[in-house]
Structure formats: C-alpha cells, structure tokens
Length: 357
Image 1 (tube, rainbow, N blue to C red):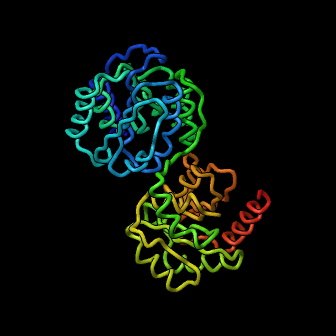
Image 2: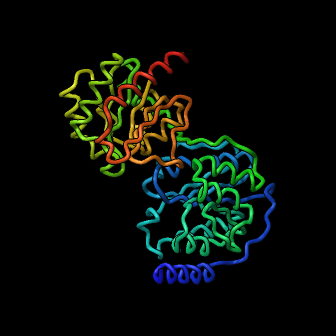
Image 3: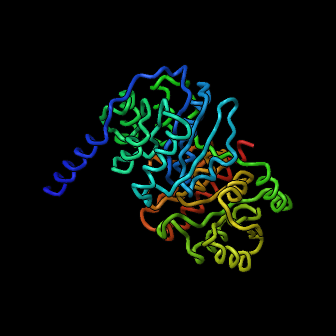
C-alpha cells in the first residue's frame, strides 16, 4: 500500500509540474492538428476516426507523430484537402525523454504552435506528459481519464469508454471527436494500401483464385501457433473447403511458412520479402482469414474480410469489427486451441459467407 501511495504522490507531482492551462479553440479555424501515436500497428489503425473527423472538418494541416514500427500504416494515406505530414520516432515505450522533447521542439520550430493535439497513447505516464508539455498545443484531447488543465474537459465520455467500459478503441476515438464538436465519422479501423503494393501481391495471388489467409504469428508466444498445431488447423480447413491457403507471416515466420508449403498440399506463401503492407494486401484479397489477436485481425476489420479470430484472452477493446466473424477464446496459450471448436467455427463462418453471397 505504501508503494502504491508513494507512486501516486510522485505521479501527481510530475503531472502538476508538466501541466499548463489550455485555451478555447474554434474548431472551424484549426490550422495545425497533431496526432501523437508512436505505438504499435493496431493502435495506428484504430486512430483513423480521428483522422477522418479532422479531414471532414477541413483542418488545414494534420501532423502525425508515428513510431518507426507503425509509420507504414500512414504511407498510402491521402486526404482530400488537408495537408498531411508524418514524422516518426522510437516507439514511446523505448524512447528516451530527450528524444521525446526533441520531437516536440521540432514540431513547434518547423510547423508552429499546434491548435490541437490528440494524445492517442491512452496511457497515464511521464513520457506522455513530457511530450504534451514540450509541444504545448493550445488544447489537447485524450482518453486516459486525466483531469488536468492542459486537457479539454470534453474528454470525459471517451475516457470513461476506454478506461471503465473498455470499449472498442476506434469507437472511443469516434466518440471523442464527436464530443469535441467535430463531424461524426465511422468507428472503424483503416489501413490504406498503395497501388504498387496491391499490384505486386496480386501478381502472385491471381492464379490461385479465391484463397484463405492463415496467420500463425502474434506479438507474443502465447498468441502464436506452433508448426504442429498449424498442420492440424490446415487439415481441418481442407476438410471443410477446397481453397488454397496463403500463409501470412513476418520475417521471423519465414522458416515455418516455407516448411508448411512443403509439408501441406496447396499451401502457399508470397515469394516477396515480408512486410506489413504486403501482408495487408494478402488479407485484402482473401475469401476468409484466420488469425490470432494481432494487427492482422485489425486488417481484416479494416477491409471487412470474414475472419476467425483466436484470442488467448479476450480483449473488449480489440474485437473483430467486420460483418462476418467468429471468435475463439482459448483462455491460455492459443496452441491449446480446441480443434473441435475450431472445426465448428470453420463450418459456421463458411455457411455465413455463402448465405451472404
């Protein structure tokens, strides 16, 4: 109890030290808006309701602070009339305070004082406050439940949605922007793709016709399928539907993917080097995707691709958000998936797809 109390006292001290008085801004005359999201790929995909609300409000310039990990999410993003700038930094968890301060100073020096900053990290920590204090936008929006002078009071509903109700993250951002007086937008993940990426991937997938995309990798071991379990999943898929399977994988999954293409009939992988955008293009063209809870799942939501989502533990903030989905919650490492349950999910999702076609 003493440690918790001391931690709370220190956090309160630092928050007061870095706090400042925000000012009222006229939403109809925003010159520069900053979105701070140096985080994971899924977090970047979830922030698009903020981007679309700013775009619909005819904001002159949107500047996104991304991480080197999620910068690719914004590579193909285009906006109708709003100028877009994307700068990247080390992911916040690994960034030093000096780097965070330098990024904030760079924005003020090169682009001027922002009218508004949307702090999209959804965390109560020192690094976030160092950035907010260094940037010193006229006002700030957040969903972390912080009661500080630098944050607009309209953040209360979105903060409750995220911190208490644990609502889907895109929904939290859509509500936040609506409550702040911006146009209502769709609560959805997005991941724009360039024609270059779509074309190079289609060259390899077009000969297959309809296919199933199978992702075996999550960000942690508990959210990844082993080679042995992958073979069992593939066998069940083949019992239910005769379609080629494309293994979606990152650089670490090359050996496993190659091995599965050799040991399983009609299982394929791209010959192109792995990348987030190429994986997204494979998902974009799939008849069905099967994936653990990871950024690939959010890609299926972005493109409205039917999915079987496999969770170690279910996360209400990160659900499947497309028209057709089946969810399996294993309750521990996903390698312990109940194969009978997976078989039922395959049958059910295929029936739902066929009924809608």
